[in-house]
Length: 285
Length: 335
Image (cartoon, rainbow over the protein chains, first blue to last red):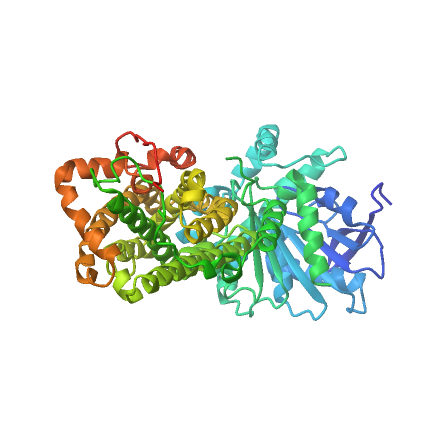
């Protein structure tokens, strides 16, 4: 058990070792926290501290990050494959499938949160999206010049070898650059191996995202039924602030909040984000 | 003026609670039973009675009352125009550029208050019409109108294409309403009590909610970073000013419609008798005075009177039409 009361759990899910943190607060509503890129579950440390007492917290590692194995096949980095992993983690956490569930995702974790929410769940109470976009929303933004410019890294990640080499040789400079956007290093000393996972392996999610575009476009899942909270930043270097109209076919009920801040809002303004999340969950128990 | 940020949901919640707590109902708050006192000035005047030099005592009284009606009608019409445009300039705009539910709720309250102000000023105008034995629509003909004018149509067109000129117009009207009351306040004892009181009530609420239009302007131009957004950012204020100036000058010409009412009440007869006074100064001087010295009218035509407004212009880095330096005059309200 770690200092924050989180226990690391692993399981072989569809043939791959998958890891997640669990505070084992059984009986309380479940909060599923999905980190982004190039993060680990440690990115949620401020939220863990705030909510550990009142909620059952589940913090999965992304595919290929930390103890979650890196697959040989590119397809296992795909959003729909990761969705199956998340559903399996939820089943292992709560076999009854009755405990109320709140899903929170940041960055690419937000995309996973949207897909998880699109999967019918009577126990799903809320979805909270931080600095992220629904896959369809993101694809529609190909017509937004400013968003295309901000998404430069998605294009760069499609190149073979070059981004890996850049990260290997310039990881300190790259970390300094994302730190300006509000990213913070993990509280524990991050080994290069961890970083290799969160920065290098996880890059494959973006590569698979590009390959999955036809699937996203063909996905006819209806709008998310649970209430959705979208928190975005005015000065996010990777994402343009949303308009409410973008969600008309994606969710039945959306609350949009645009805050002055950068890409890692939950690290930059933890008290405020915790208050907004807490109030949102309280309003939809 | 130090304001909280519009994304500060806690501060906005407190402001909204305060707005709702202090919300007044104009039916019960204003002393309507007192009626309109035609023996008193409505607003104080400068020595030259706006653009009517050498006006007699009787003419000064009527000019003051007419100016008071013009001010009331301007607020009624402008605030009605805003409420009518609510779907376009508020609802659809915030759908495109949302901030948070608290900002939206505060906006809803803002529109409720604006609509109330409009009804309050219209009620005063109806009371005046009754007092002078004319129909309200006849009184309307001698006062400025916004509905159906080029001003309204152009502002709507600007909004349809993504501009925000209407918010500039509204912000200036809000500033004018605050300044008007401050200029009236020293003359409280000599002005029509009912007229003074509706302006006092108006002032109270305007001071509380005027930051909203500032927030909207800053927010909209900050969020819309498209080429179109930059274009409107640079041109909206100049468009608003141009329209306002043209509208104000053409509106004042409606005074001549009082000719048809001259037999209804001495007020209209005396008002008509003021028109020849205009010839004593000529059109160029009249326009200069309207921008520089005329009380209340110059507040609307000349943004240089308003420090906060100038600050906003600087922040947005937009283009404003040049106006001559204001020259505020000493005011009086003869007893």
